[in-house]
Image (cartoon, rainbow, N blue to C red; front, side):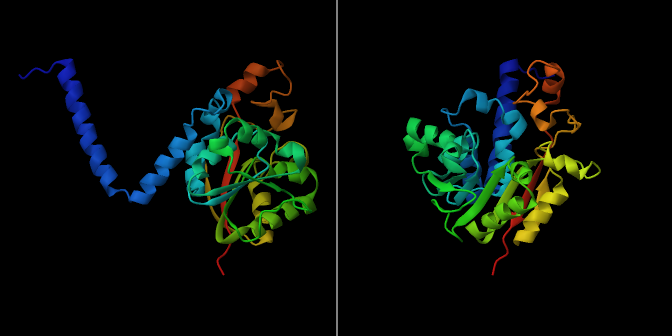
Length: 275
């Protein structure tokens, strides 16, 4: 019987794996491969805050942005970027070939993005600031965006009432070019739970989000379970904020909430119909 040393066996496996990769890579369209590489590179940006990178295990940025179809040459609008968790990724993704708008309510809503722009102008200096919901400030021009993304924001609009929520979806629809994409990630309330919880828990039903989007003119395209969390029971006394990263009850039941992880989330892709 022929004997292989551990090193020789390892080398053989590596060569075989490389051959398999080369065959697989050859089958991939170059544009798709370049987009995948750009997404992975943006997520691996070394200037991302370590605390933000640690949340990738819950928020799956590569799978989420790939599902939505984000590309480096797009004009992308991020709605209410908050502290800039996704902005840290979308900035590097769009800096060479695309454009990025940070659309937020008032001065405070832009503070996180402004801090990124000041600290790393080479990566984030191209970001344009816009008001959302728009009243009289800087506006994302109608029909200018390839993609609008909103991460865990719909419940905030819902707290202001159904009319405010619908107005937000209407404005996002107006921003997009025909054929443009709206990507929504939101805390998910099971359909069999009381709809009144949408007004206080931070969770929304998929059917409710679809209704607002479709009333604005969007067509539902598809859904992904990439941000699902089967451990989430959706019935926490303080709503979604009991869970990480907020831990609204501080040390009370912290181990339980840490074991659950971040919330169960819907990931929905809508399209603005082409003319």
